[in-house]
Length: 128
Ligand SMILES: [Zn+2]
Image 1: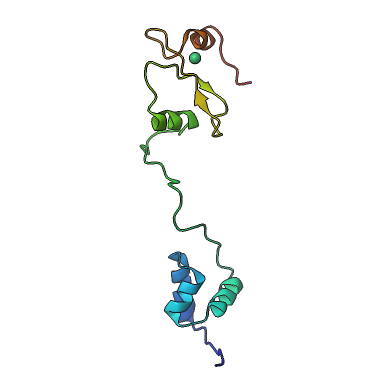
Image 2 (image 1 turned 90 degrees about the vertical axis):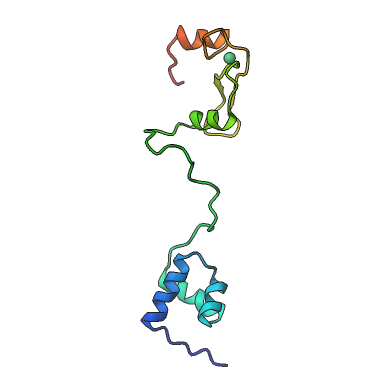
């Protein structure tokens, strides 16, 4: 039961490929007929890049690519399907989950409620 294992170039590249495909160490071991420990040690020695989990949580939005800048507010608006009859004045920090919208009834023809229309149109918002 000696684990004299020859890491030929071929096997190294196989390991690399499987690693890049996102297989776990034990899966790679299985495929290559090598113990998990041998793979783990090799991976460590090869300094292969750490992988994030294979299933990334919808990191890529399905929005149009041409958009110059994906603003958090925009994304939220799209997600929420905000009613057009409610004030869409953002409250909270768009970068956090606390983020929400005002939700008051809007003024006719305006995207915001009376209070926020005033804020939007009379003063220029200087971002804190
Ligand atoms: Zn409002």
